[in-house]
Image (cartoon, rainbow, N blue to C red; front, side):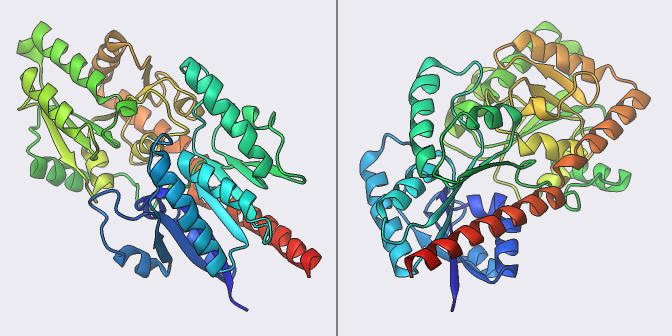
Length: 398
């Protein structure tokens, strides 16, 4: 009898970015893997070629990222339940805040089949220092939905501590994994020749200090703070300003960031690279990466930078605290603190080649615990646990 497993998220690119290893594990366990998400987002991922390549059956649902778009998300809930009924889904792994809500509500409403529901929280929206609405509304929502959750998976210590206060479904379990799995074969240091060629192809001069950020162009990623800091540095010391800054990613703030770049006169300094498929090489040729997010569950972009040997200038949040050590593998600043960011950039530029080499080596060493082999080992145990729960429920209903 064919076994079906459904992975649920909000946007079409989530599976390709974060769940390939989980798909592989599930297929090795004999499952036909389905994926439900809004396949029309983002714009650069149209068509289902990547899903066919992975051997995944993809299903479009009208999920919206915002939980306040109730009409779209209610329609998505109905579509999700139809998929689960059609394929007799007994195991559902949901991701992203809206995906987590839809998946657990579907599990609650499908009382006849009683599917096993797994939810990976890639960063609760209530966290230390979060706005009051996050700490009240989002906390209450997660606390309520925990009752419909069989397995809750966390990726950082703060979230794990909070999750253990929740009451899960009877017999429910909490697991912690070291992120979605860092691919250190793909994210590896470049040779001197590769680095030189890449910088040359980007038009980065030998004397220019190249900074790079990787992440969706949204308010949380906080790129505007970096632009403010660079504009100030250029005004205060134009004679010694030899910095280039690139941002990889796309999103709804692209036009606003482009406008800020023009207003600040940073056109020749800042480049919006958009969606790129060569992130390892871009990170590898940078002198440092900037990871200025207001909040992160963990922050794979920071780990990927460290893995290629590029030190990180990171904002202080619960995610980066899992691996950043100020002065050891980079520098840390407050996400509102432009002065702190400027000091961090200046400190990075002042490092000698020997100091930079030592920092790079420490960065590569510190990411080993986040290697995908560790995440895969835990996820295999989690999926085996979930499969046993599903088999037990099917037996009890027979």
